[in-house]
Structures are given as C-alpha cells and as structure tokens.
Length: 165
Image (cartoon, rainbow, N blue to C red; front, side):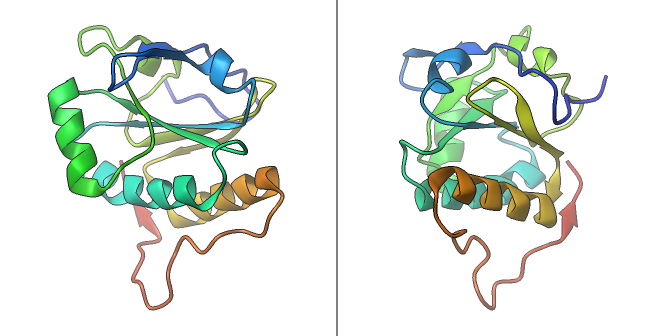
C-alpha cells in the first residue's frame, strides 16, 4: 500500500514521545502545521534526510511550525540516532511490534515525510530523499511562518537530488 498523498486527511497519531509524554497530532495541529517525519535509525536515507529537517525545524518559530519525528525503533536506539545526527526536534515512538502510526499512513519506505495543515489535510507527502520536495517543504514552512524561505541547502554544500528510501 503506498503512503498517503497530498489532499488526503491525515490519520490521527497519538504516541509516546522520547521523553515519555504522549503527544497527538490533533493537539499539535491545533497550534501549527506539523511536519511528520517517519524514520528508522539504520536507514542511510533517513540519516541523510533528517539533518535537513532539523535545519527546517530550527529555521522557523515553534509557534509557526512543528517538526515531529516518528521513529520505528526502540527509545535507546532512537536517542543514539538523535545524538549522532544532531536531531533536537521532538520524536515519537511507533510501537515496534504493530507500527500503528506507520500502518495508518500506508508506509512502504522511510523516510516518509508529511506536512499536515491545521485543518488536518496532508499538504505535502514525500518518500525517500528528493531535494526538490524538501525545498518545497521549506517554502511551505516559510509561508506558514510569514517569512522568506530559510537557507536549508548551504552554498558550496553538495546535496544529492535523489536518494531512494
């Protein structure tokens, strides 16, 4: 089953966070649009992509955009991933036996990234690493924040156009 696409209604997600609190998509999106980034710690494409999502998370005020990771791994392995790749945005833990959130979103590969509007509609859906789609996500985040797009891809930085998930 393919991942949900733009225009679909985002399934509700309510999962424990890395710090033990339970967070739900419906509560988060009442305040800001939410970027949901599903990942596995051993996935090379996730290791490549999530630091760019970290840049997006840091570029815009928290009251204008929420970036939320959803790990398909244990808390311990997820914490190590976050330390290794400099991830500071909140991360939720999908149950590693049943994967309720991943299944609700129809994931076939990771990373899978969704931008969910405050109304609950998926505005952007991307799987793997596609530089143009991350650039589009950055533009949508900037529009939500009411500002010019941040520089996510730095000058003289070599950034892949595509990397399969």
